Length: 255
Image (cartoon, rainbow, N blue to C red):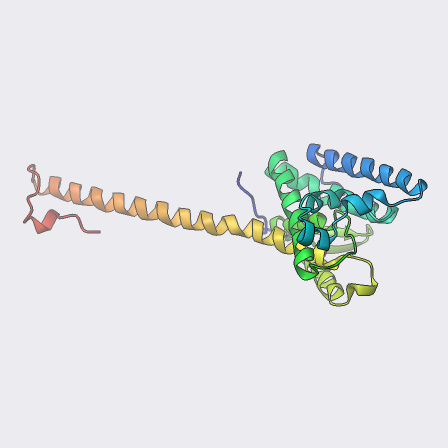
Protein backbone atom coordinates (compact mmCIF):
# COMPACT_ATOMS: atom_id res chain seq x y z
CA UNK A 1 0.00 0.00 0.00
CA UNK A 2 1.66 3.21 -1.10
CA UNK A 3 1.34 6.41 0.83
CA UNK A 4 0.88 9.66 -1.06
CA UNK A 5 2.54 12.80 0.18
CA UNK A 6 1.04 16.11 -0.80
CA UNK A 7 2.68 19.45 -0.79
CA UNK A 8 2.86 20.82 -4.30
CA UNK A 9 0.79 23.55 -5.85
CA UNK A 10 -1.29 26.19 -4.15
CA UNK A 11 -2.97 25.85 -0.75
CA UNK A 12 -6.45 24.33 -0.79
CA UNK A 13 -9.17 24.49 1.83
CA UNK A 14 -10.53 21.44 3.56
CA UNK A 15 -14.11 20.79 4.54
CA UNK A 16 -14.93 19.50 8.01
CA UNK A 17 -14.96 15.75 7.90
CA UNK A 18 -13.15 15.57 4.57
CA UNK A 19 -16.18 14.22 2.68
CA UNK A 20 -18.07 12.37 5.40
CA UNK A 21 -17.42 9.60 7.89
CA UNK A 22 -15.53 6.71 6.31
CA UNK A 23 -15.81 3.04 7.31
CA UNK A 24 -12.81 2.69 9.63
CA UNK A 25 -13.47 6.06 11.25
CA UNK A 26 -17.11 5.09 11.85
CA UNK A 27 -16.03 1.81 13.46
CA UNK A 28 -13.58 3.57 15.78
CA UNK A 29 -16.17 6.19 16.73
CA UNK A 30 -18.73 3.50 17.58
CA UNK A 31 -16.24 1.52 19.67
CA UNK A 32 -15.10 4.58 21.60
CA UNK A 33 -18.65 5.77 22.25
CA UNK A 34 -19.76 2.28 23.35
CA UNK A 35 -16.89 2.00 25.82
CA UNK A 36 -17.56 5.52 27.09
CA UNK A 37 -21.21 4.61 27.77
CA UNK A 38 -19.97 1.63 29.78
CA UNK A 39 -17.68 4.00 31.69
CA UNK A 40 -20.65 6.22 32.50
CA UNK A 41 -22.61 3.28 33.94
CA UNK A 42 -19.47 2.17 35.75
CA UNK A 43 -19.29 5.62 37.31
CA UNK A 44 -22.95 5.44 38.39
CA UNK A 45 -22.11 2.15 40.11
CA UNK A 46 -19.61 4.04 42.22
CA UNK A 47 -16.41 2.59 40.88
CA UNK A 48 -13.71 3.01 38.30
CA UNK A 49 -13.40 -0.65 37.45
CA UNK A 50 -12.90 -0.13 33.72
CA UNK A 51 -10.13 2.43 34.13
CA UNK A 52 -8.41 0.43 36.87
CA UNK A 53 -8.65 -2.81 34.89
CA UNK A 54 -7.95 -1.63 31.37
CA UNK A 55 -6.20 1.74 31.66
CA UNK A 56 -2.48 1.92 30.86
CA UNK A 57 -0.67 1.80 34.19
CA UNK A 58 3.07 1.76 33.32
CA UNK A 59 4.01 -0.18 36.46
CA UNK A 60 1.63 -2.99 35.42
CA UNK A 61 3.24 -3.17 31.99
CA UNK A 62 6.82 -3.24 33.29
CA UNK A 63 6.13 -5.29 36.41
CA UNK A 64 3.33 -7.66 35.44
CA UNK A 65 3.59 -7.55 31.62
CA UNK A 66 0.00 -6.42 31.10
CA UNK A 67 0.80 -5.69 27.47
CA UNK A 68 -2.84 -5.66 26.36
CA UNK A 69 -3.23 -2.39 28.27
CA UNK A 70 -1.27 -0.75 25.45
CA UNK A 71 -4.38 -1.34 23.33
CA UNK A 72 -7.29 -1.16 25.76
CA UNK A 73 -6.32 2.25 27.17
CA UNK A 74 -6.99 3.81 23.75
CA UNK A 75 -10.76 3.26 24.08
CA UNK A 76 -11.12 4.77 27.56
CA UNK A 77 -11.65 8.49 28.17
CA UNK A 78 -11.64 10.83 31.12
CA UNK A 79 -14.81 12.76 30.39
CA UNK A 80 -17.23 14.03 27.78
CA UNK A 81 -14.96 16.82 26.47
CA UNK A 82 -12.03 14.41 26.27
CA UNK A 83 -13.80 11.95 24.00
CA UNK A 84 -15.61 14.73 22.10
CA UNK A 85 -12.40 16.42 20.95
CA UNK A 86 -10.67 13.12 20.17
CA UNK A 87 -13.53 11.87 18.03
CA UNK A 88 -13.98 15.27 16.40
CA UNK A 89 -10.37 15.30 15.20
CA UNK A 90 -10.64 11.63 14.20
CA UNK A 91 -13.68 12.49 12.06
CA UNK A 92 -12.22 15.69 10.66
CA UNK A 93 -8.81 14.32 9.59
CA UNK A 94 -9.18 10.54 9.59
CA UNK A 95 -11.65 10.19 6.73
CA UNK A 96 -9.38 11.68 4.10
CA UNK A 97 -6.44 9.60 5.30
CA UNK A 98 -8.54 6.43 5.06
CA UNK A 99 -9.64 7.29 1.55
CA UNK A 100 -5.99 7.91 0.64
CA UNK A 101 -4.55 4.73 2.20
CA UNK A 102 -7.47 2.33 2.42
CA UNK A 103 -9.27 0.86 5.43
CA UNK A 104 -6.63 -1.70 6.45
CA UNK A 105 -3.70 0.68 6.30
CA UNK A 106 -5.62 3.33 8.24
CA UNK A 107 -6.47 0.86 11.00
CA UNK A 108 -2.83 -0.22 11.12
CA UNK A 109 -1.60 3.34 11.39
CA UNK A 110 -4.14 4.23 14.10
CA UNK A 111 -3.11 1.36 16.35
CA UNK A 112 0.61 1.75 15.68
CA UNK A 113 0.39 5.37 16.82
CA UNK A 114 -1.80 4.53 19.82
CA UNK A 115 0.37 1.64 20.98
CA UNK A 116 3.54 3.58 20.24
CA UNK A 117 2.28 6.50 22.31
CA UNK A 118 1.62 4.12 25.19
CA UNK A 119 5.10 2.63 24.92
CA UNK A 120 6.62 6.12 25.02
CA UNK A 121 4.69 6.85 28.22
CA UNK A 122 5.88 3.59 29.77
CA UNK A 123 9.50 4.35 28.85
CA UNK A 124 9.32 7.85 30.36
CA UNK A 125 7.60 6.75 33.60
CA UNK A 126 8.08 2.98 33.96
CA UNK A 127 7.13 2.90 37.64
CA UNK A 128 4.07 5.14 37.51
CA UNK A 129 0.85 3.84 39.08
CA UNK A 130 -1.34 6.51 37.49
CA UNK A 131 -3.48 5.03 34.69
CA UNK A 132 -3.29 6.67 31.26
CA UNK A 133 -6.43 6.65 29.15
CA UNK A 134 -7.57 8.07 25.82
CA UNK A 135 -7.01 7.88 22.07
CA UNK A 136 -5.10 11.17 22.02
CA UNK A 137 -1.78 9.55 21.07
CA UNK A 138 -3.35 7.91 18.03
CA UNK A 139 -5.18 11.13 17.15
CA UNK A 140 -1.96 13.14 17.29
CA UNK A 141 -0.41 10.57 14.98
CA UNK A 142 -3.29 11.08 12.55
CA UNK A 143 -2.78 14.83 12.76
CA UNK A 144 0.92 14.35 11.99
CA UNK A 145 0.06 12.18 8.98
CA UNK A 146 -2.38 14.78 7.68
CA UNK A 147 0.29 17.44 7.98
CA UNK A 148 2.72 15.30 5.99
CA UNK A 149 0.31 14.29 3.26
CA UNK A 150 -1.45 17.63 2.89
CA UNK A 151 1.00 20.21 4.28
CA UNK A 152 -0.52 23.20 2.44
CA UNK A 153 -4.13 22.26 3.06
CA UNK A 154 -5.77 25.18 4.88
CA UNK A 155 -7.71 24.38 8.07
CA UNK A 156 -10.23 26.86 9.42
CA UNK A 157 -9.88 27.05 13.21
CA UNK A 158 -13.28 27.81 14.76
CA UNK A 159 -14.47 28.31 11.19
CA UNK A 160 -12.77 31.72 10.85
CA UNK A 161 -9.01 31.42 11.43
CA UNK A 162 -7.19 29.88 8.43
CA UNK A 163 -3.96 27.97 9.02
CA UNK A 164 -2.02 25.53 6.85
CA UNK A 165 -1.98 21.95 8.11
CA UNK A 166 1.81 21.85 8.47
CA UNK A 167 1.78 24.84 10.82
CA UNK A 168 -1.09 23.43 12.84
CA UNK A 169 0.91 20.23 13.34
CA UNK A 170 3.97 22.23 14.43
CA UNK A 171 1.94 24.27 16.91
CA UNK A 172 0.19 21.28 18.48
CA UNK A 173 3.45 19.32 18.58
CA UNK A 174 5.18 22.24 20.29
CA UNK A 175 2.35 22.52 22.83
CA UNK A 176 2.57 18.79 23.56
CA UNK A 177 6.35 18.98 23.98
CA UNK A 178 6.30 22.00 26.30
CA UNK A 179 3.41 20.54 28.29
CA UNK A 180 5.25 17.24 28.71
CA UNK A 181 8.02 19.09 30.57
CA UNK A 182 5.65 19.95 33.40
CA UNK A 183 2.72 17.58 33.17
CA UNK A 184 2.69 16.39 36.78
CA UNK A 185 -0.15 18.74 37.75
CA UNK A 186 -2.07 18.78 34.49
CA UNK A 187 -3.53 15.28 34.52
CA UNK A 188 -2.95 15.04 30.77
CA UNK A 189 -0.56 12.49 29.28
CA UNK A 190 1.29 14.92 27.04
CA UNK A 191 4.11 12.42 26.56
CA UNK A 192 1.56 10.14 24.90
CA UNK A 193 0.52 12.98 22.58
CA UNK A 194 4.10 13.67 21.60
CA UNK A 195 4.83 9.94 21.36
CA UNK A 196 1.93 9.42 18.98
CA UNK A 197 3.22 12.15 16.69
CA UNK A 198 6.79 10.80 16.82
CA UNK A 199 5.77 7.21 16.11
CA UNK A 200 3.48 8.35 13.29
CA UNK A 201 6.29 10.38 11.75
CA UNK A 202 8.81 7.53 11.94
CA UNK A 203 6.30 5.04 10.53
CA UNK A 204 5.46 7.25 7.57
CA UNK A 205 9.01 8.28 6.81
CA UNK A 206 10.62 4.86 7.28
CA UNK A 207 9.13 3.14 4.20
CA UNK A 208 10.17 6.07 2.04
CA UNK A 209 13.81 5.35 2.84
CA UNK A 210 13.26 1.67 2.08
CA UNK A 211 11.49 2.52 -1.17
CA UNK A 212 14.35 4.89 -2.00
CA UNK A 213 16.87 2.11 -1.53
CA UNK A 214 14.76 -0.24 -3.66
CA UNK A 215 14.48 2.42 -6.35
CA UNK A 216 18.25 2.87 -6.40
CA UNK A 217 18.71 -0.89 -6.68
CA UNK A 218 16.25 -1.08 -9.57
CA UNK A 219 18.05 1.81 -11.26
CA UNK A 220 21.36 -0.01 -10.85
CA UNK A 221 19.84 -3.11 -12.50
CA UNK A 222 18.52 -1.03 -15.38
CA UNK A 223 21.93 0.62 -15.87
CA UNK A 224 23.64 -2.76 -15.79
CA UNK A 225 21.22 -4.14 -18.38
CA UNK A 226 21.71 -1.07 -20.55
CA UNK A 227 25.52 -1.46 -20.45
CA UNK A 228 25.19 -5.14 -21.27
CA UNK A 229 22.98 -4.31 -24.24
CA UNK A 230 25.54 -1.75 -25.42
CA UNK A 231 28.27 -4.41 -25.36
CA UNK A 232 26.04 -6.74 -27.40
CA UNK A 233 25.13 -3.95 -29.82
CA UNK A 234 28.79 -2.97 -30.29
CA UNK A 235 29.65 -6.58 -31.06
CA UNK A 236 26.92 -6.72 -33.67
CA UNK A 237 28.05 -3.46 -35.20
CA UNK A 238 31.62 -4.75 -35.39
CA UNK A 239 30.42 -7.91 -37.15
CA UNK A 240 31.59 -10.16 -34.36
CA UNK A 241 29.30 -13.18 -34.51
CA UNK A 242 31.52 -15.48 -32.51
CA UNK A 243 31.41 -15.60 -28.76
CA UNK A 244 34.16 -13.57 -27.16
CA UNK A 245 37.10 -15.57 -25.92
CA UNK A 246 38.83 -15.19 -22.58
CA UNK A 247 41.37 -12.79 -24.09
CA UNK A 248 38.87 -10.52 -25.86
CA UNK A 249 39.19 -7.48 -23.61
CA UNK A 250 37.08 -5.40 -25.97
CA UNK A 251 33.97 -7.43 -25.19
CA UNK A 252 34.76 -8.50 -21.62
CA UNK A 253 31.89 -7.58 -19.27
CA UNK A 254 32.98 -4.90 -16.83
CA UNK A 255 30.92 -4.05 -13.82
